[in-house]
Length: 108
Image (cartoon, rainbow, N blue to C red; front, top):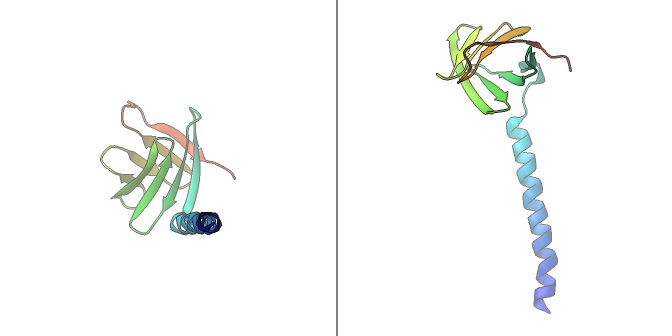
């Protein structure tokens, strides 16, 4: 009889933990939407760049990467990936690609 009483508590606790984790994850990844820009490349590739004070966060199909500033306000890199952008157009160099992808800011 005690087992049947603990099952609902366990379920409620699990739901509360999951909801808390989702809320915390959303808060961690959210930010000023003006600092985020999506790009669409000529080859159909897409990525999002979040511009932060001392770096950019590149969200690409291959992962999420932190790129540091190489040239003030225009070029960022992590040693493998290079992003050049003026926020309306971008060139993205990825490992294994010989040529940078030409990309333009995507409309939402």
